[in-house]
Amino acid sequence: MDAPHSSVTPEQIWAWLGEVSDPEIPVISVVDLGIVRAVEVLNDEECVVTITPTYSGCPAMQVIADAVTGALRGHGLKHVRLVNQLSPAWTTDWMSEAGRIKLKDYGIAPPAQQVVDISGLTAGVKRHSLPPKPSVACPRCGSPHTELASQFGSTPCKALYKCLDCREPFDYFKCH
Image (cartoon, rainbow, N blue to C red; front, side):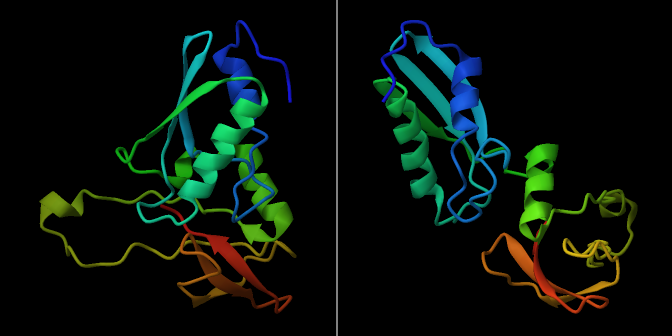
């Protein structure tokens, strides 16, 4: 355990939180995943960390909260307060580029960036049309020839795909 810090900075706290792994995907930190939204140092003894779940029913949030609190206390911060922020809702756009690379290297296809055209909502276009399917490259061989096997992967945040070239199944982190 580190000695207590008399003048900890938000930048130092962000760095410490960058070492806290997501419990469901241990190769990516809660910072790279975009769960940590804000860090504030109120005085030399109190730190406020704002976190947003990847979805409102995420079962890992208590584990994440405990890991964040434990990491900061392990660095000598005695008073850590977590704020759960549900709005705006978490989006895969908050993931860092480093986090996307870590997912791919781990064998999970990172979320494909999609632009959803909402202009049809007010222009009288079909309201029940589905968004286009994402182009998901295989994280193992890089092939774009993949297909959805199941909307439900190993966690609610992921879908199961299979590569039509190397024939391997893989998780795809859904775009939210």
